[in-house]
Length: 547
Image 1 (cartoon, rainbow, N blue to C red):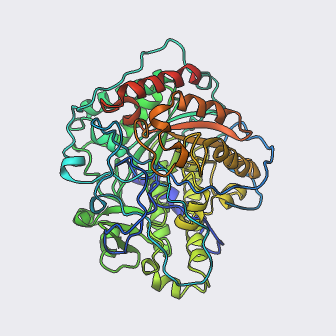
Image 2 (image 1 turned 120 degrees about the vertical axis):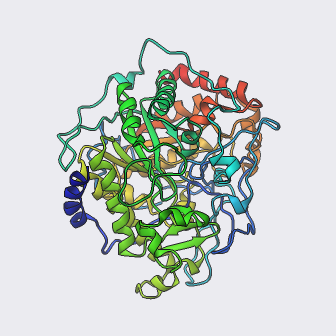
Image 3 (image 1 turned 90 degrees about the horizontal axis):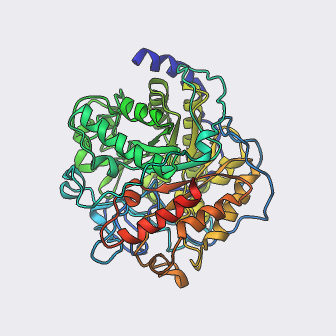
């Protein structure tokens, strides 16, 4: 196993792009709410997200209404294995986990001290103006990571799983998969990817609820989840394999995740069971978000442990540690650990969400910025995110050229660029960054600042500039909840119907359309009792057009 990986590494290290990437955009922790927090503390000062709650913070994204320039009618390529085409540029968190409140039918935001640190306000290091930031970021907040909320999750969920009846027919896209290119790199596996993605995010929160004490128990659990996905018409799963500086696989760089028991390697099981059902398996990682401060001891013997306390490569933000992409050794670690996954396992791609910079506070990287030669902190950070994304792309292609790499950014373009420092437009328009873009468009049709139709069309215009497939991230996590920052549409997720169906149909009308992805498994198949009827009707309506 390791020989296979290290051979890839010798080539991959040479290809990792570290030098000279210019301004990049912003993206933050898996669709975080744009709250203000001091580095080193967890005190929420202002700007909480909408009134739904704990989720795997990377998927209920921002919402300031930033428009992209006029539509350009360029259709996406039939297969996205070849990467994005060349062009020029523009412009909240990985799939957030929501828990439906059975009492109010909505979501309850977790205590800030226990949730993923929200984005913080940038101090006055430079005078470069920032675009306005919307208070509505889609409402994704990292769930509390406490013994009672995560680690003590029992195998038997308190909610009833909604199993979609098995269908005798597969979705049309599943039966018309493209022929992958001849792979090169250390892994000769031919990756399975679809022209039209019908995806499902399976978060670490979903995996935590599965029985994992033995290999056979976990195989049964993940197989059942895949069966539900396939019956709905899903052909691609985006599964967490690293959420907090951990590994759901055998790794030389990160310790085994605390969210699974047992001593076996779970990743071959997840991949094998997916492929048995014709599901493309995308390995989802959070490259910058590391463990909680209290868990740093688990990293002993691994690279980030040696960086703890120095506040350079590894920085404390609230109750979590984050890697600082300003340092070459950090980029190298991220690239090598990505190559480790793609070279050693038959995954079909690598996927990251919007956990980029966790704060706009200048103290996060004062020393690195001071010696960088950049005038503006924002330009410096965008350049670092460019290096991060291009290095991941190179690592994936070096390990297996037929595998794909993509980014699930916030739905709010302004927040990506100004708060996450993720220049998503540049990544779409330039080669060597990504094979697809998957914005988390978690807004209703009546959202005052980011109405769904306008937002998805803006993203289509951007994707078309680089002929990059647009996979639209949709959420099942808002049903039954007031969308506090949606203005006129604040009650839409309570009163309206067939929202997901209408969003899917609108997405298919876009010239760059490459599919959709649902956030997340638990919200679709295990809704709380207070919203179960509404969610089941929504999923039934969606299934009628998805297959």
